Image 1: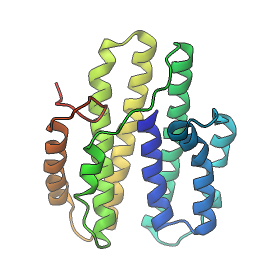
Image 2: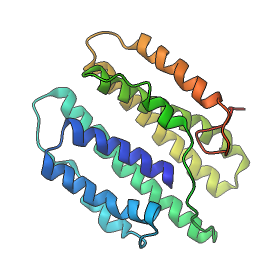
Image 3: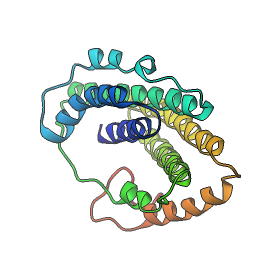
Image 4: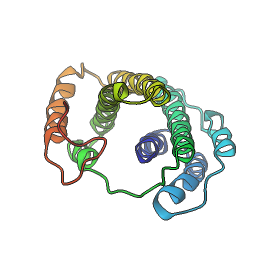
Length: 213
């Protein structure tokens, strides 16, 4: 669940920083707060159905900037999908009597953020490429785990894999649309940093830590 929430938070930050006005940003924050309270602060179980209906792009400001519209469309859809996955994971845990336990984060995403350049528009481009790598690495992990699971969980993991693959492509498409030049060299550079992070030793195993096998 934490991975899904963090993916939604990352997309929300992009919308808030680059597209939404204050009212739209506050509305998005309000939608995520029950998930954050439950995940990080032992808050009550969120009303998943009601919250899911609240998240939509119609309340966001309209923009004539083509990449701004594409970012808004892609990120709002990503937020809705990730929070739906959060709900699905929670239902699976409840059905299998698996308690929710808070865990610490790996260094993976934090390490990627350190590679992001500090000025625009390349800051946004780097953030989008890093987002693509996180989604692609999730695909790898779901694909590796799925064959070892029971039928129901395997189907669920494969459905997550398909969603993450689409999110990966959305992030890369946005990065290329915003960039004045071809982004393949920057993708390669950040890919080297990402590979070093995923292969780096971690004190505790997490979804985005540990050497791929």
